[in-house]
Structures are given as C-alpha cells and as structure tokens.
Image (cartoon, rainbow, N blue to C red; front, side, top):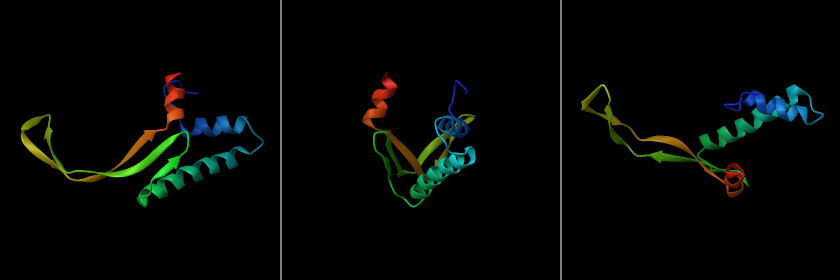
Amino acid sequence: MNTKKLTKKDIVQRLHQGGDLLHRTVADLVQGVLDCIGDALKAGKTVELRNFGVFEVQMRKARVGRNPNRPEKPIRIPAQKVIKFRAGKELRLHVKG
C-alpha cells in the first residue's frame, strides 16, 4: 500500500483480505457505493455517513480573480457548484489520534 495516499484499489484489496467475497465482488461493491454518493451529489442531495462525515453541494459565488502572469487584468470567475465535506466527530477524533 502506498504510504502517501489511499486509492480505491487499496480499499478493495484491504476489504477482500478480511472476508470471503471474491475480489471482483468487493470491487463492484466499492464502485457501487461511490456511484451512489456521486449520483446523490449530482442530484443536489446531501450525503450523510454517520460517524464519518457529510458531503454536500454548495454554490460558490461569482468573483473576480487575477492571473498571476498578468495581475493588472482581472478575470471574472463564474459561480459554480462545489462539493464540501465536513468530517464527523468520530472521524475527527480518530485522525487526532
């Protein structure tokens, strides 16, 4: 497992090691969960995973930005949807150690 990041492949391998399910079945289940979360966010729903956190879509307001190479010329950045994540209490405590 890569020490700098956790990939979907790492998750599948870890879950596969701990059970009797086929590797392909575990991979399909993990992908299914990710697809469910993505579809809910696309529909504008909030995804709440108890003891883990909350994913939600918010609108970021339009604003004026600057090109670092030409800072004298302002650039209009349009409003856009962004995904926000708020960690749950148990996840925050787990990460703190």
